[in-house]
Length: 216
Image 1 (cartoon, rainbow, N blue to C red):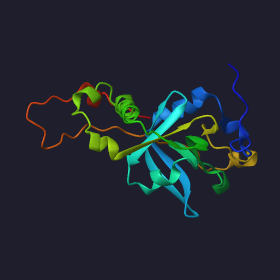
Image 2 (tube, rainbow, N blue to C red; image 1 turned 120 degrees about the horizontal axis):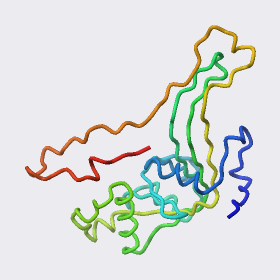
Image 3 (tube, one colour; image 1 turned 30 degrees about the vertical axis):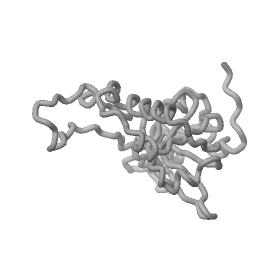
Image 4 (tube, helix red, strand yellow; image 1 turned 45 degrees about the vertical axis):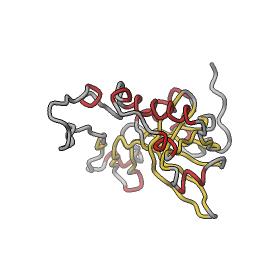
């Protein structure tokens, strides 16, 4: 299936060779890390709020407290949602060419609140299961008040672009003769050994979805 051309709002104007609009590329970046930033305007003032997100098909979801100013402000309004991953620090032979290797996605759209309680619980289940398969059924079921106190927002991923930089520095040709070290310092998110809650009941085993957790 052909990928439709990007809208003028998300088309890359500089370094267009780093851009991508294929859904498989967008989805892979969105799924690689659970933290996004939501940009919106509240009372004429721009704000950017970090929050947790997850994807279901061609929609992105995020959630928070029903008392959240951000969640109340973005309902049925235009938002800009971004996901960014740092992969390396790029050191060149000139300060001008220092850079960073990264994967990022920018999405534009109108946020919609999930109003139905059953759908909301289903979306939250998917969120938990996408990170920790099998965990939802181990948990105490959420109460009606907990569902009511949680807001879930969604937006279609239909106006979006990825921007990716990979590889070594790109210096001016004459600078490659300079005796200056250049290269990439790789960066990755490291998952360390889980730390049990000191109030765990003695003998409760650590689930596989904890020991096998990966991200990135």
